[in-house]
Length: 517
Image (cartoon, rainbow, N blue to C red; front, side, top):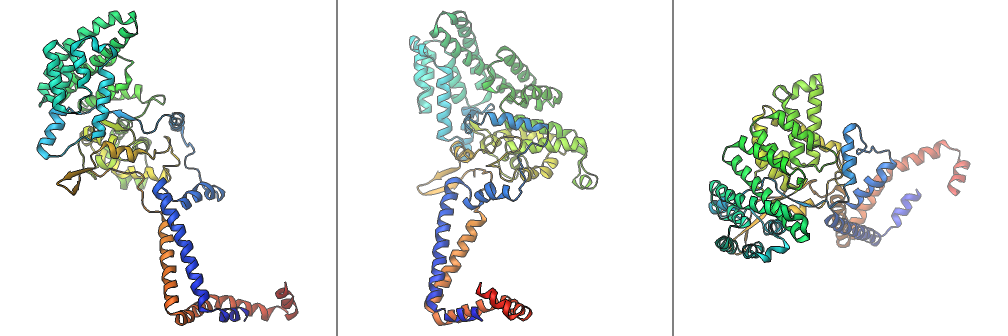
């Protein structure tokens, strides 16, 4: 009865104030949630509930190691202080003149971004120049050529340098940018090799005579390694794969400390082309080590070899009935490991997303690395019977193991948040045609997909609903007052029924004392 009396005393102004206040509070929460989501990529309420409330309620820590492979995660966590978004030179980058430019001539699209080409220019200045270049006229010209933005100006400078004397770096530039076929590029690289070997031998004898000679020897070493590697890639592209494998093995044996070039990834791709899986396993045994940086090539090649052992007879229906065998479990775990390292690759391997030409630089664990890997290795997965079917059936299971990849990882450190921004700089996401028309060239893959969290949607709905109630109450106060009283009476009807039953059961004196308290 007291509840009914209280409801009868409420005026329409109270309901207007109540709904208006609720709408204001909901709007403020919505604005804060949206700002936090735009800035940090996650919901504040969801993050608080996951980080603080979930452990109190007995949530399970998915990042705890469950097998011996978790040592990989521990080792990678120790390297988390290193910049997560370090950009690496693509070990299998294409030739600008013979491949990238031909694509532009045919399609009218630019496959490389300015940011990517600028990084290449910095690499060329680092690897192909030194402080003593001003002492030799040809090298002085090339030092300026590597800084030149205009491709034609760079090519003209390279020709000018070759007119003065044989210059290895000038031949490299012409092979990369002027040659329109791989055959022409190979011819120029062979010319550069002859000059580069002579410079390397001379600087090797003088490297201990001072810092200047040491820097010159380091430059000549970089030039020689680059030339030999590109010659091996020319042989691979021209179908002489065994020759390419021999050249790469000799190069790795001659310069074992130059791991920054990732020559082993070129070797892995060539061995896979020859279907020499025993040698592929031998290379992986050396480079798939917890102390060495991982890559999509390492992780997915290891998964491919394990999938190859079971994929031809794998059936999801049979596996669901009898369970997974030990070999199948090892293959699935290898796929989960690879997907955790780079979750963008499967969609390209399964042709759920179209490929583009790979950039000259990649970001590990990013979309750029996934494109570069799938561009060269898709054929190797297709060649192994059932491998893509096994990948299709198992790769999404990885995400159940790491439901919050930005906060916690499983075998690797948490997925870097910065990959999307860096990939948008490396990949040609948009192309302008005309004055105002912008055509989508490639849509960058984002992981995890930044969808609007439930809390933002709920707050937006609540804000809209309360705002509509406030407007209706302001326009029709008496009618909305009747509806509000009817709604609250219906809402409190079960409570009133329980109170009446309690009054009828308890003695009146005891009930009187309780109501006074």
